[in-house]
Amino acid sequence: MSVSDAAECFALKEKFKVLWINVDGLHETGVIEKLGELFGIDPLTQEDILHTGQRPKVEDFERYLFLSLQMLDFNRETGEISQEQLSIVLGPGWLITFQEKPGDTFDALRQRIGSSNAKVRKHEADFLAYALVDSVVDHYFSILEEIENRIDMLDADLMATFSQETFNALNALKRELIMFRKAVWPLREIIGSVARDDFAVVGDLVEHYFRDVYDHVILVIDTVEVFREIVTSMHETWLAGVNNRMNEIMKFLTMIATIFMPLSFIAGVYGMNFK
Image (cartoon, rainbow, N blue to C red; front, top):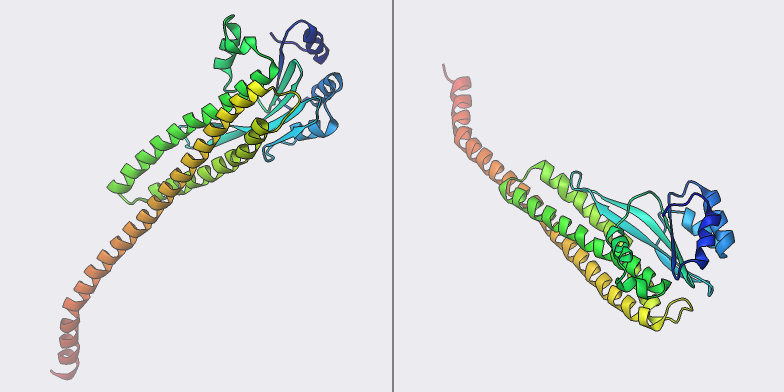
């Protein structure tokens, strides 16, 4: 359901076992301040929510837990990865998510919540937080599949022709992988902290689920590193291929020069010294 006032959200707290409030867009700072006032969210946390593009992190305020991470998406047409900060504030019986813009990867989760037999409906708010983080990490694997397909396409182009377009595409993909790594790498420490440390709003059962997410994050990081090595190798292959082409051209020009050099010598000597 959609509401237009933060006070309406707070009123729903007593109605539901777990209350999930999602805020699309960070331009209305008054809404964030009002939610902070109603749910006891620290002003420092509100600043972190508004300052997008920061390093993912986790902070424990005892009465609530603050998580920030990067949601990523892959554009098939441009081959670029877009990123958006997702802020999660987890409290006892409630959870608030803040997104930079509408649209996310939680549609499947929302459908599960709508089902009366869904596992997520039988747990507390900490399990919902796990489900949200798990959805974000699972989407990383979808992006990795797209990147793998793009690497295969570039590899085919590289074998067919050593064009400048292929070289530029390799450089662009290399930059995207660096950005991907910067967004995902801090999650290893963050998810590991949630899985190990005793946070008041995270139960022991959910810590077990977060350990599973931790394993997935490690797999994502390892895959990104492998892709970076592959792209770097393809980059070096392109440079080697261009150098080989240049060497072949130089050999041909040297052969031509070797053929015409004696003729030029004879023409120069006899043309200038004899009638």
